[in-house]
Length: 227
Ligand SMILES: Nc1ncnc2c1ncn2[C@@H]1O[C@H](COP(=O)(O)OP(=O)(O)OP(=O)(O)O)[C@@H](O)[C@H]1O
Ligand SMILES: [Mg+2]
Image (cartoon, rainbow, N blue to C red; front, side, top):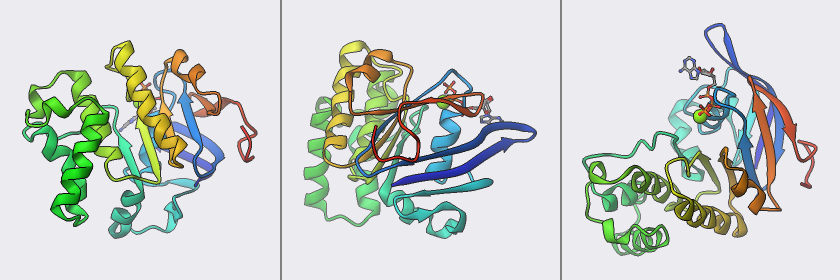
């Protein structure tokens, strides 16, 4: 489902990622860890096609990034959803509008949109905030809107960049449960976090630790099926 081969990325003369190679299969759950500046967000952005692939190769959900033209990126994004570290939700729109937007863009019929958005908001304990403007929400609520908007499309791959960063412990566990459910149902999840308790809570997960742009630790053989 995700395959990177000697993937490297530089910002000017600084190499933020160096020779990253690993394989994830359908339904895998990966915890991506590593200190601040290790390259986690950079890797997520490349996999989502929001940063260009400079060196090496990577494929995700059947798309080979090297040969994917910009005008076809929307096809990749139908299968690969991302929760950005800084949310990137629309502050002057309601919670409902933010979450419904990806479905409307896809041309889903209105009553299906309503059903799906309602279910997702309920699952993330946001149903009471449906009609609030996002700029009026707390940081943790905005973070959950970002998660709702990513999961509402039922993606094949879910990239989540520190999605529990602003949440208290109870909400972190509730959110973790949402991701776990997607994993159980076959979604491939990449979850960047520093939270050791969350990592320990999911035995089946793979873990990959980056430092200074390199892989320094992993709990599987990187190219192998088994954790
Ligand atoms: N747009 C950019 N221009 C220049 N340098 C960048 C840019 N984005 C990231 N970097 C650099 O690349 C390195 C990796 O950054 P990245 O955001 O991927 O780290 P991270 O592991 O996500 O860190 P954090 O845990 O703080 O979110 C950092 O040293 C950062 O300064
Ligand atoms: Mg980051």
